[in-house]
Length: 443
Image 1 (cartoon, rainbow, N blue to C red):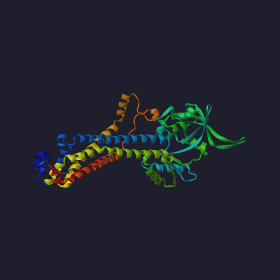
Image 2: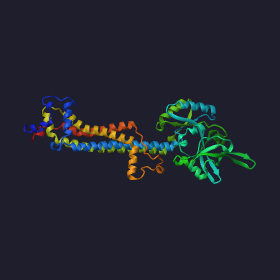
Image 3: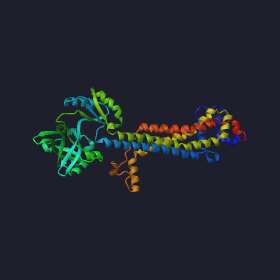
Image 4: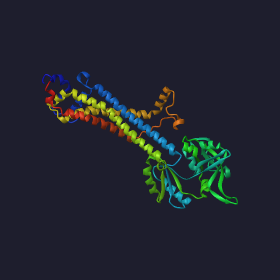
C-alpha cells in the first residue's frame, strides 16, 4: 500500500494530510475539480464530462426555445381565434336594462386592473342580400369610436376606411365586412347591401321581414376564416334599431391585457360590477380550442422534461466511471482522515458542476436564440430559399412568434439542476461507501 502512495500523491492536496476537511470547503472543491478534469492517463473522464455538459446545455436550450415558440404560437392563435371576438362578455341580469344603467356598468367594469378595453355591443345572425346573391352573416353592433380603436380591424383594412363607419342617413349609413363576405356578395367599398332583420312587420300582404339598405364603407382581411367570411360590423344604434327595436340588451365586450388570466379576471369583474351578471369567457365560447392548447402545453412540457432526463445519462455514466477509476484514491483519502460524507460531497460537486454549468449555458443560449429569432429565421430562409412559416398558410406576419415566460425559464433551470444532482447522487453515495481495506487489498 505504501508503494502506491507516491503514485497517487498528485491527487491528494497537501492540505488534506493530517487535517480535517471543512464541508464543501476549499480542499473538497479542489479535489472535485481535479477529478472532473482529470486526463485519460490519470483515469479521468474529462471528455465524457465535456460531452455531458454539451448534452445538458442543448437539452435545456431546446426546452426553452421550443416552449417560448409554443407560447408565441399559442398567443398568436388566441389573438387570431378570439381576436375578432371578446375575451369576456358581460350582460346585466336586469330583464330591461336602460342605456344609462349599461353605461354605469361599463364605467365600473373599466376600472378593473388588467382590462384593456370594454364597450357595449350587440350581435345577431341574419342574411345579407345584393344583386349577386344572398349569404348569412353575424352582424356585430359597435359604436364608431370603439370600432376605430379596434386595432385588429382598423389595421387590416384592404378597401375603404372607417372614417364614416356608423354614420350617414338612410342607405348611406356605413358598415364594415370581412373580405370573404365581400367576395360572396361580389361587393366592394361604396356598394350597397340589404340587411334583413329576424323581426317582421304586419302589412296588407301579410307579415314581411324588416330590412334596411347600408353602404359598404370598409372591407378588412384578418386572416382568420370565421372573422373574414362571417362577420359584418354595424353602428351600435343602427343594430339595436334593426334587430332589437331600438332596445339595448346590455351586453359588454371586454378585452384583457392578458387573455390567459381570464379565470382571475372573472371574479374581479363580478366584484366591480356591484350587481348580478351573466358572464361568458372566450374559453366558454372556444372550449375545444382552449382544451387543445392546454393539452398541448402539458404534453410538450412532459416530453421535454423527459429529454432533460435523458440528457443526464452521460453525467451518470461519467460519475460511475469516475468512481470506478478513483477507488484507490478514495481509499487513500479515507485512510488519512476523509469521512464518508466528505467523499460524498466531493463526487456530488463533480457531477453537480456539470449540471449547473450545462444548465446555465443552456439558459443563456436558449434566451439569446429567442431574442434573436428574426435574424436566425431570415438566415435559415436565405440558405433554404423558402419561408419557414408562409403567412398565407399560418396566418402569421412571417416572423416566428416567440414569448419568453420567465417563470418557465426558472422552472427549466431548477429542473435541469435537480435532475443532474439526482443523477450524481447515487454514484457519489457508492463512492462514499467504498471500504478502504477492500480497495487497497490487492494494491
